[in-house]
Image (cartoon, rainbow, N blue to C red):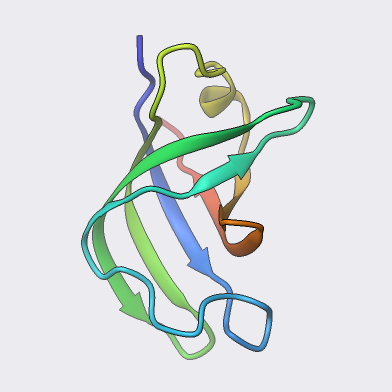
Length: 99
């Protein structure tokens, strides 16, 4: 069973090593993550509901789950924060909201 969690995404600026262009404003986004104690990276599906530009960062809110059934879904309920990547580049910190 897939675990779907509510998330807040704080995007890194270009100066911090993040994206050159703004993040997706809405819609589905498919980054990867490297979780603690997991040897593999995992693909995620994030549905971005809202994105706004704050003084220092772009902030998005939405819902996230793993793309594959055999992923460690339980970790989405145990972790408070994960990092997301586009290729090898870290682009954002994702904060998992309490359910």
